[in-house]
Length: 180
Image (cartoon, rainbow, N blue to C red):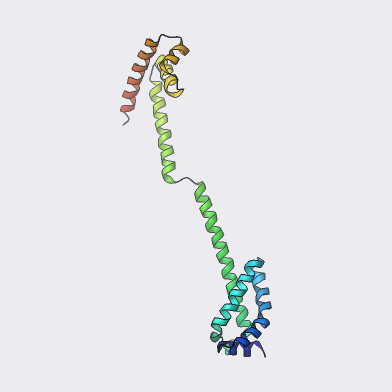
């Protein structure tokens, strides 16, 4: 019995006919799928899906439009191409996600830009201080020294450092307050 006759019987629900048809077409189906999909495990999956679809949709076969084998191989080819496209699309999605993960979000970029602008503004305001005030403020606020340590590093009395700090911070506040 040929594939065409078997497929007509399968359309009527004949399981024995399906077993014989399976034995007849499973090799060519797997071979075709393997050439398209390439991965052996994926090819086996797709071939099984095609043969299952063959059982379910045998009634759609029209012998007037071609042979059963060409119809079955067309099903196999379509399913194999779908699998390749699906795998490619999944890979592209993963790639886009990976790229998205490497690009900071707009909020993060805008915050970094804003912080950079603020630092630049603070630098300009620091430049308006006297050299002695700038030294004291920089040592205390950027280098983390206490007033006592600033006094020791600059070899100045603690009271002098406190005065410079107070005057420098007042000038900074006025300068920065003008920006707000």
